[in-house]
Every structure is written in structure tokens, then in C-alpha cells.
Image (tube, rainbow, N blue to C red; front, side):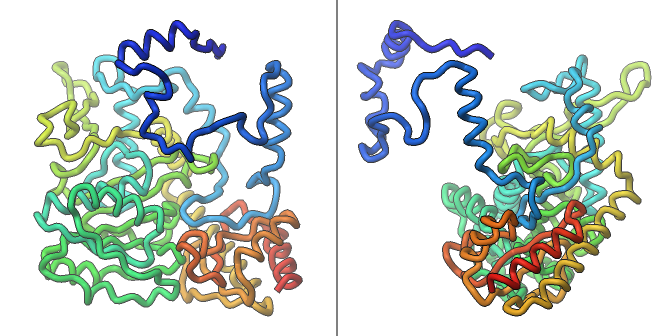
Length: 446
């Protein structure tokens, strides 16, 4: 796309329309310390297009790409193999659009894709109904808490210490501005917190992640029973959706709402997004569910068709009746999710999950034999926590210099807490030589 800069006349016209005397006046609320007073450090000034491409390519080459070195990072975003068919299919002209078309007269293909996506998510999570996707897992989590408020008319959410900090922060930020109380539990590296004991008659919901951000897998049946006894909802968060190919579905353990990040299927890491949020509920809560829902019907001739069945945003209904104004859905990412899952099929998805777990077990066994490494988890899916004999952040930097991305230091997620803990993940992309390289490097630096 050609870059066409604004002229001084363009700027003057825009400022006159909005009533600002100057650009500086327009940004008067920005603190002086945040104002840029000169060129951006590290970026060259005016250059030709070819020179700009070369400069930026050289800067990008300083990054260590996930696929170029042994890679063990997870913590909510996972490197999986995405079949080439997925990318080819999502780029077909019928699908590739900046806006998700919902008009049934012209959008039967898009509506059917969303219907299939919803069906897949409902089956994966063990729930009755799923919506047509949301921004990502974190915003889906925040929406679930606000939904619990509408359902129970209570204003307190208990957030597990095993919840990913990004999900926690997104939820507490949204909750703050609607007057909702969040009882955030301390970080739970050992997976021993007792959430059941915290549920009382004021609790709207309990939010728990499975596997936790530290990789612990837990049976949520007792927690579900405790929530039901007090009239609270159980919201289960899943950041690694591939785990649902091996672990019991949250719905089978009594979840009322399941939210998840679907990035692992069909969507690459891409430096953190765009991703796709999954949101599924029991049937009785469908009218309090945020976002959109596509349904199947028949036309006047009895032929199968698809329509936008339920949409509770304020652009569709009265503002005071809207459940949420979040701008869903992540249409193209949801399409990639559905194509990848369709290619895998039920048996293939289970096989992928088993491969992920088996690789992680090999990794854990190898690391446990390294002096200075202690594996904290007794059960995990494809990610677990290790305690190192040195600060994890320092070790990660040393190994990155050797061309190994060793994991995510817990201190990076929890504001400096637990500096000796490291999150390590393995997927089907992790090879035996990758594992050997990490173990050997750790043995040298610890």
C-alpha cells in the first residue's frame, strides 16, 4: 500500500473541525515526560523504500525466531505445527476480509464456518453451547466474570493463584470499572491452594485455570460441588486448548462457563496475536452469554441455512439490555482453528495431545536428572515448573546467548516473585535433540 502523508492543509482542516488550535493543544493531556522531543533512538531518518526494507530486515534478524532454535516457551502461547492447508484455506477470497460478514443472504459460507466452530468448541469443552469466538482467552475470562455478575446478582469473584497473570490483570481491570470485587489468591507454584474453603454466599464465581499457569492438572469436581452449594458459578480457563484432547472436559467436571485460548490450533505465535478466544456455557446461561451465536435453520423451501441467531451487543439491542459491547469475533483466527481441528479429526486431535504429553514427560525426566534442577509438578500436560539453583531470569539469558530459548521465568509473570522458578513447555515440535541441548546447557550453567 502506498504511503500518502497528510499535508499541513489537511491537518489544519481536521484541527478546525474538532476545535483544537494546534496539535500540541490536542495532546495537552499527555504528560511532558511522555512527549517525544526528537527522532526515535535506533531508527534512521528519511530513507528510500529499498534502504528501509534492508534496515528493518537487519533489525528483525536480531530476534531469535521460535523455529530456529530449541524452544521451550509457553505460559499461554504455544508453538505448534500448523499444516500448510490452513494458511491456504484462510486466504481464499471468500474468507479473507477485514470484517466478518453476517448477512445471511450473502454470507452462508462464513455463517456455516462459525456454526461449525461453535460446535467444535462445545464438544471440546463439554458444554452445551459456544459463541462465535472472542478476542482472546484473557478478554473471554473477563467477560465470563461479568456474566457471572449478571447471573448471580453478586459482586465477588475468586481468582485462583494458578490463573495466568495476564488473564488475572485483564479481569481485575474490567471488574474495577463495574464495581466488581476480585479476591485474587497468591501465586500457587505447588498447586496446593484450597479454593473450596473460600466459596461463600457472596461469591458470584470462582475462576480456576486447568492446567494451571504452573502446569498443574487438577480434578475440579469438588470445587464445582462447593460452588453449587453456595450458588456460585465455576469458570474454568484453558490456555492450552490441545490439553482438551487428553484431559477430561471442564464440562464433565461441572464447569458452568469455560473460556479458552484457541491459538494452539491453526494460529502461529506471531509475537502475541491476533489470537482467538473460546467461550462456552451451559444452555441455561445462553442469554447472558456475550458475543454472537450463529444457528442452523431451514429456508422457505426447506433447505438448510445459517443465520446470526443471537447477538446481545448494544448495536443490536437496547444498551441497557446488552450483555457486552465487546467487538467479537476473531473470525479469520476462528476459521483457522476450525480448519486445523477438522484436518486433525477426533482421533488425530487425541493423538496430537498424547504426543505433546509424551514429549513433555521426556523433557521432565531429562531435566530432573540435571544437578540444580527440581521438577515441581507431579502431574502436567505439556508444561511444568522447575526450580533452579540460580535465578531463572539469569539462566534464561545465558542460554539465549547460546541459542536456546529455555522457558519463561516465573518472576517475569509475577512481578519479581519466585525468581528461582522457570516454566518449561514442550509440544510436538520439540525434538529429542532439542531436549538434549537444553539439559546439557543447564548442566553447564547451574
